[in-house]
Structures are given as C-alpha cells and as structure tokens.
Length: 309
Image (cartoon, rainbow, N blue to C red; front, side, top):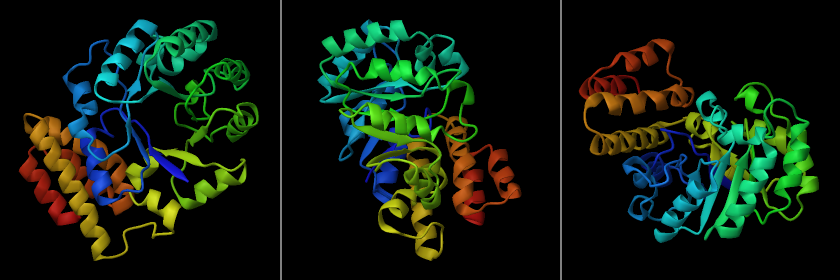
C-alpha cells in the first residue's frame, strides 16, 4: 500500500509536511496545496523550494483552466527539479468553481478535453490528476472517464463525490470501481472518508485491490493513521511516549510558523485551524478548544497547550 498526504490549502504546508515526516512518517508522497499564479508568488515558492522539502517525495499541485498558465507553472517547477505535477480538478470551493477551475472545470468537458490535449502535448513534466466524479450527477462520470482514457495520465486520484456534495455524505464508491474497470492503463488512487482502519476496510471491501490511497482530514485528526493502516499500530494516544511525540510534533509546527510569519495572529490562525482536526486525536473537550480559540498571544497559547495536552 502507498499512502499520500492530500493537499489542503493553508494546512498541509511545507512546515506541516516536514514535521509530519520527522515524527510520524509512513507517507509515500506529499502533494502541495495548489499553485495558481502564472509566476509563482512568495507563498507558493515556499511550498516548492527544494530546501523546504528535503528527503520528501513532493508533487506540486496546479489549479488552472488555461493551458498557458499551467505550462508556465510546470516549466518553473521543472527548473527546480520536479518530475511530476498534479492537476487540481477536485476543489469544490464556490469561489474556485465559479471561475471554472478545480471541480468547476468538470462542468465544461469539451473545454477540459482541449486543455488536457494541449498540456499533455507540451508539458515538460509527467502529469497526474486529482478529480471529483462530476458536478451535479454521477452520470457525468462516464463522460469524464472517456476523456481521461485518452491521455497518458501518470496517476488518477479519484475523490468519488460530486462538487455539490463538498465533503458531506457517503462517497460514491461504485464510481471508483467503474474507474478501475474502465481505466486499466492508468494507475488509480482512492481518496475520500478514510479516517480509520475500519473505514479503509469498508471501502477496500467494495473495490478491486486498492494499492494507493490519499488521506486528508483523516491524517489531521489522527497522525498515526498511516501507521495504523500499514503496521497495525494503536489508533489513539495510549501512553506517555505517544503524547510526547504529539507534543513534539505540535511544537515543531508552531516553531516553524513563528519563524515564517510576522506577528502572533497569523501564527495562531494556522494553529487554530489545525486544532479543528487535531482535537479528535487528543480528546480535548469543547471547553479546552474554546480556550485555544480565545488565545490572542503566542505565550498565552503555549501556556494553554502546556496545561491541557
């Protein structure tokens, strides 16, 4: 089994990736939050600079619906030594979809097809794709599969939900099974609602063998999840060593953001975002999470964390 870390804007940054690799590991491939500027800006460059990703297998993800933009970013990435780039056709955000990017690009399949033809003909890097199965109806998936099978896609990562479903409800596992039966020449990766061994077993039981999975919210909520799936390790914090590892992991992330950002508020914003997920792993109460959310200074935040975790 290969396990990938999903790209999550503002969360799975290079700081998080490096801390995760040092303290938990078991990730075979990391995907960056999406890049969308024709000329990469400061924030985007931080994500892809080789010195920020030493020892990690990292695939930059591009959010674009114009071949010129995609190819410009890919050419810059090639200069940094990357060999693969990932196309984002999965982001369900309303602001992204309104611009026909991310999952929104799926609503205009003829335009998408022309776009793919151009980038596959001209891109200096191998191209993988992360996709949803449509916008409004599972019936759209057949059209999209017919498009995907035309191109030498390095890997197709399928989140079997529609754009309108965002992250709600049960994934359409049967759509992934259809992809397995249809796209025999394209390696497939499953993404969606794997948050425990039981949830993985449920999904895997409905599919042909799944050799690649991508984890997002499940890893944030339980950083031991990759090890759980690969090695049968415990699912929760169970002893002092586990708690210490989590604290060291947390403290490294905090230190990284303090070094990168100016001022307490940007740092605390990032850490509070993470606690929306990490609370499940540590079992913090609503009262304790409220304390964290109310903190306004880094010293105050540190004091709260020391007292509850």
